[in-house]
Image (spheres, rainbow, N blue to C red):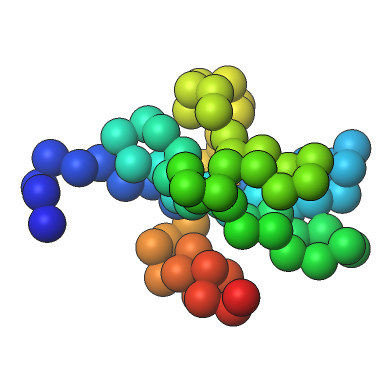
Length: 84
């Protein structure tokens, strides 16, 4: 694996819509996303960037206003991703 790849894993709750977002960023770009709500789970990638009203995050990381508590480990993300 290329050592220059910078990966971040984020878990954020969107109160207005009551949705949990898990996002895997690579070099500042979202490459995998999970949305978990009362309607179920939606899995998004660059190959499948949209399902219904759900769209893969395409803004900059800075737009998210992240707190330290929003960052999760790769293992936490993979656990949620593999639960398809």
